[in-house]
Image 1 (tube, rainbow, N blue to C red):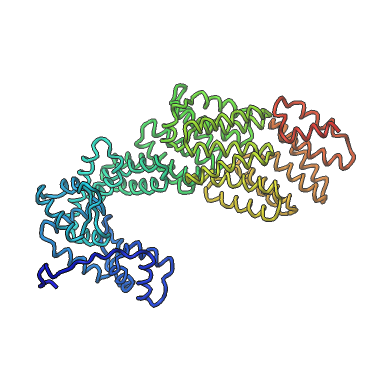
Image 2 (tube, rainbow, N blue to C red):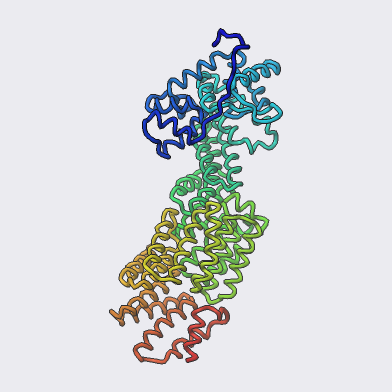
Length: 631
């Protein structure tokens, strides 16, 4: 063919195979149909090129490693494919051969301006070399202006990259990084991940770490939390390679602090992988951080500990931060620290002390801080403070004020249009309705929380809302399947690393088991709840755990004296904690026992707690109590 004059040559362009055709031709090589797990990657790797598909199947275990764009040996090619592509590149004129290597360094896609800055060719020589590559279908034009190109196949780019010497690669990566920076001007964020990668392979870890951090910020701004985590992790690897100790510590601290928010959002406030970077950030902040970084590290670790139900340690850390901030400390960190203190008090069952802590957080908050909160920690702490404190209001008997605060919280979250904060506010509001025993409204708000958390990959609130949905469904339609769903929801919560509110969730599971007639299993779950509360100091549900224990024992009629003892214990705990709704609920359960034994009229027993309510008269327990007294 090579000897034939051009007039006798006919070039026929063959289109790429589709996925089904690629699988079919590969099946002929294997003498069997391909599985989906074989066919999909084959099509993605070959992009429908028949030769590549055939040779890749023939050489499944006989491959040649090729240095990829990350400088490693990730891409593997069959020797025949490598040789064909290498020979094809070897036939290029010198200018085109040089430029194809530079283009491969840039990436699969490239533009002429970056190519010009990274190469040594003049404008005319560059245009001629690019035209040669285009004529030979090594590259293809991707825009109408002739300024943007990409390689016609990944494998061509892989081989072109592999054939650039290691020394030249580093030199060219540096030139490309600088060209991309220059082309981006004052706003290099869009290209920051690409710039970071080039600096990494140019052997400049300080610059690479800084740009990986910027790239993570871009990813997080579009809710790509897993991408942000991956970029920050790569940045930390680069930071560890910085020779200067002070620079290394400074960059490592900034990256560790930035790593916490996307992990917190995507995987949970107490995700196991969060502990190491947070403790390292606290350590580094004391060595190399400024006041703001020290505060951020402390408050981040404090909330990790709160949600892991290490309440005493979390509260101590937050109080230490508050002392360090002083009376005129940073508004942002004051909001966060006081919210942590308040949250710990709520979960410990000290609702009277929680309200003053909430007021300190509330006074320090301004909605203008939202962007700062979201950037530093991933969520709006004004929303968190309001939502959490609403639970304390409910326990104190201020049900209407609690609902009002919960709805105002949701309005703020919607106004700032922040999905993590919206899922948070909805989860707390759904929980408030669960505490009130309003199953339909629990479902209503939990569904919304679940939808937002699922859409934006907010792992902690996805798991939390899932438990509320399972419980409310089970209360509306008790069954063995409903119990299984509730158990699965709690199991799905454990990977978040959270232990906070487990007494509540276990109480909910015990309710579901009791409703399904599985009394012994329900009592065993309550024992877990008691153990958890005793171990963590999370005593906010103690009265309810004792009430449920008494209810279950009453249903079984196995030991009425023990049932009564549990109910009296529930009343005494609720009274001591000033938890008026739980006192009334336990009193109603105790009244059921006393009435069944014909021991006393319910009026005197129920009237005392009922009379202390000044609002929330539409709650199911109050409606029940009033109906009982009206008989």
